[in-house]
Every structure is written in C-alpha cells, then in structure tokens.
Image (cartoon, rainbow, N blue to C red; front, side, top):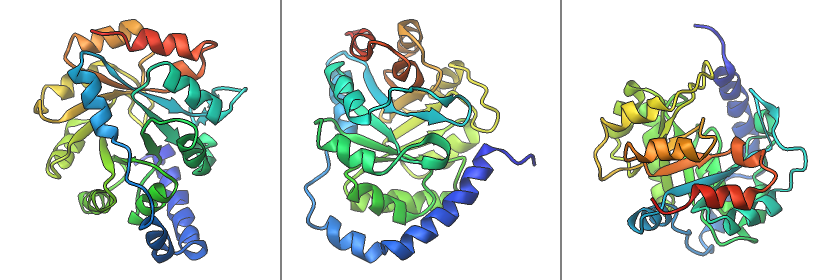
Length: 265
C-alpha cells in the first residue's frame, strides 16, 4: 500500500506520545485531573441547538494543514475563539498537532479561559495517555479517527474518555469504519467528507453514510463545507451539525460568516 500522510502522522505520533510519557507521566496527569472542574457539555450543546431548530456548528481553530499549508497568516487562537463564540458557534475544535497543523495543546487551555464554549481536542488519538492529556488541558471532547486505529484501541480510548466524563466523536469516512464505530455504541459520529488518504472531498459522503445510522446518534458532517448553500444542502438531508474550519479561518469577517451559518432552519 502506498505510504501516505496518515502513515507519516501515525509514525511521528507514536514517538511523540512515548516521549511525552517520559516527561509528564500518565500517573501525574491523572492525579492533577482529579481536582479539575467538570467538563462542559459538548454533546449537550449540539443537541440543545438542534432541539431549538438551529444547526450545530463546531468552528475549528486551525492555522495550517498538510494539503493547504498556512491557512491564516494573522493567526491568534484566542481572538479567533472569541469571534467564534460571538458568531454563535456551538462548540470549538482546536487542532493540537504541531508537525502537520501547527497546533499546540496550550491553545486548549488559553481558549478555555477566554470563552465559555465546550472544546474538542482535534488530534490523532492512538493512546489513552492522549485522552488524559486532553482533559488536563481543558478539552471536553476527543476525536477518534477510525482510519487511524483498530477497534480495540478505539474502545480503549472511548472508555478512558468516559471515565473523564468527556464526549467522543467517532470519525468515519466509509462503511467499514462506520460498522467498526457502531459496534462501540457511539453517541456521536462525525462523517468526514474528505478521504484522508487521497484528500478527495465529497459532501455526498455524509448523505450516503447517514442513511445507515440510527436517529438516536448525533451526526456531524466534516470537511468541504464552504458556504451557507453547503449547509442548506446537508440540512435538506437531515444532517444538522457541521465541523467547519478552513472556510471560516480564511474569512475576513468571522463573526458575520458564522452567524450566516447558524440561522434557524
């Protein structure tokens, strides 16, 4: 099989996690987490928006990506997050991977201290250590990319997050990954419209896979959502939650753009 960006990320992520375990042992993190306040409700925020007739928008703080390079030159993660809250975002996704996305774990804590919205740690989770680490830095939710892990690891990550009272998004891109995720009885599934191996993007991926998912699971459409028409297209197919990064990050008026995305349907 051709070596691709996900293989590269997984290689350096394994080394990164092992090094972190030496510098900040898991036991120490767990002890510090015990005294933290409870998580903010990521899933409950999305459900409340939907129940009141509004789309749930998870706005992403992302400076760069492997496919696009630098997305926003005047990048200030705190100012961006404050604009997201002012623009009626339901939650905020924060990239914490540095080599490929120029993200930092510290962004989570900085943003937590400046807004009241729940936070997703957006990273490549391969080890329960990262879940404890996410909670220590004030994340309320984690992402498990099913393309990155086997079912046993996914379950281990999920169980660790539940112990921390964190929400979990199972990200899938195809039917095989969906079936793996469904076996773990998820509450939230994110359908990535972009194949992370080829970078091909198709909004119909959300529509096609959503038909195979029961209504009691909260669905999020991820990637390739650029404008209000894309949101309306997905809403017409009963998909009510959206993770949006690049189009917002590139905007010269984040607040107005977000408000146009979050009107009542």
